[in-house]
Every structure is written in structure tokens, then in C-alpha cells.
Image (cartoon, rainbow, N blue to C red):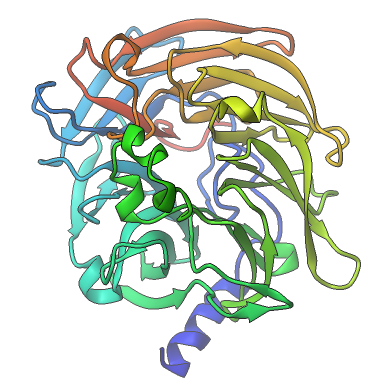
Length: 428
């Protein structure tokens, strides 16, 4: 990468907002503007195509979620992208006008215009040369920087293993730079080169990354995978703290068991983040180590690790005092009290589906959305293969289901990632 590109990236990052987002979903990049400060109008669901279900293609499904609307809880628009590329995650650009969505199998990145008419998104560009430009495949996390999109990939085009990197594009879809996940030793800990999620704390100039597995594993049937001893060794066991402005890894932390989603506390007084490990069913706290670096600490257990409940998505409350955790295998949604992040306590549990994956909550914490699909080859079979988007209301004591859309019945496919949008100007 040229010095010009390094300087450009550093300058862009340096101009970022100094405080976290104060509205909208609690998992947004802190650089996201045009925030929803009240009721969201739509939820966009990035949906995996399923053979024999509707047109069989991946699609962006838009659902009306405003309770004052006549079409509340109904699908109001679908946009098929043609073919099945293992639709997975999405992310808004910093100006919130466009939504980037990736396929873990075909590595295509679709850019949707959701700002012009959020009820009817339009695809404006498809990036189909990620592997050619970067050597990376499996675009997973899309994380906004000012004028840029940071993309964490899961794999590489050489051997489809777990060694990967981060790609940076401008908002128009032009490639800017690639940054490799560390393989060498930093501070006495050796990197595994794996990647999964991205999360930034602008005040501390730190980017945290987590780790999962490569294409060879995530595209394998789950039943076959868990019986393959060698394959099960190929999961990430580290997290990395980066100097954000320089985009250089500064510290590698041992976090065994495949740490997935990362959530910084959104309370301005806090300086810590949490993650959950899929294979060991633990909550880990990442906090300052008192020496200018970071420490990763196992602080809680999720369910019975021996039964491998498989924690997948997590959602932190706006005040940093609560954490929702979805576990795929048992279909349970758990709430942990984070008042003391050193010792989270599970205070509520509800079975919300036969299989569940993503969870997103509104800033006020009153609305919780849940989807079902993990990966096409990892989802359950037969009657357990529920595919849905569900809305729950949370009053601090009980999750009460408001509605549920059956994606199988509606011939939409497998419901995965969600993003909120609103009509017109941001609501106050």
C-alpha cells in the first residue's frame, strides 16, 4: 500500500466523531449519521436463497415495522439479486444512504440505495472482483468509516482457509487498501490470521477484531463438520487490538473458542467491550490492562457449554448495562445484567424459536427483533428449519411477541441479518 493511501486512511479516520452514536440500532458504527432517534419504519432483512423456495435467490426483504402503518408487520418489498451466494451481513455507509451486503460463498458485494426510498431499496452496484483485487473471500462485516467502508473477510482465495484480512473501499465501491490479519507474534501471543467482526472505539483510537473460520469450514455441512476432528481445529482463538489511525495490529489476545460479535459499551463513561465465544459458550470482557494495552477476561458462562448451545449474535443496551445473547442450537434468547461487566449475570431466558441467530434492538430497548438463519449448511433440517423475522416488546421483565413472519411460508428464504431505516428526515 502506498504512503498516500496510508495517509488518506489516517486522515479520514482522524476526522471521525468523538462519541458513539446516540440513537438507532445499538450495533451501528460510531461514524454513522442520519440516525433514527425514534420509531424505525422499516427493517431490511438480508435473506439467503433456498432451493425450491420462491425464486431460490438471495434477496433484500423490507418489512414495515411502524405500528401506526396499515402494513405493520408485513413484507412491503423484495429485491432479488439472482443466484445464491450465502447472503450474510450488511452495513450502512457513514451517510446512511447506502447499504452494503455480502455473500460468504460467491464473495459478491451488493450496494443498495436505501436513502432515496427506504420502502423500496434499489441495487445500484455489485462488486464482483473482491478476490481478484484483494485475494480475500467471504466478506463478512461491513463497518462504516468516514467516506469509506471497512470489510472484514473470513477467508482467502488461495486455499479457502481461515487466514484472511480487511479490505477498505470508498463509498462509491472503489478499492482502497488491504490489511492482513496478523500471523506473527505480538507481545508474546502468536496470531492465527483469522477474522470475523470489527468494532471501533474512536476515543481510544482502537479497532478490535475477532476470529472465526475459513470457507472450507463454514460452507461444510454442520453434521459433517463436527465429526471432522481436523476441521474443528481450524477455528479462531484470538482477538486483535489495532492502532486505528495507522491500521496496524498492536496487540494479540488469546480468546479460545471462536470469538464472534464484538460490542463496545455505548456509555461514554465506560471503556470496555464484550464478545461471546461460539464453541466454548463464554462471555469475554476486553478492558484496559493498566499498562497502556488491553486485557481479555472470561467473565461469564452462557448455558451449558457441554451441550454447545452455540452463542451467535449479541446486542448490548444503549446504557451498557445489559446484553442480549442468542444461542442457535437451543433457540434461547438470554438477557445478561452487565451492571458489573466483570461478572455478568443471566437474569432472563426465553425460547424464541427452534433455531435463532441475529438479534437487534432499538435504542430505547423496547423493541427486539430476531431472525433464524445461521448458514445454509448449518441450519437445522426438517421441522426444525424455522425461518422467520419476529418482533418482541421488552418491558424490562418479559419479552412479548408482537408478530412473526414465516419466511418459508412466504417463500422468501432464510432470514439472516437486519438493518433499520426510516422515512424522510431522522425522527426526533
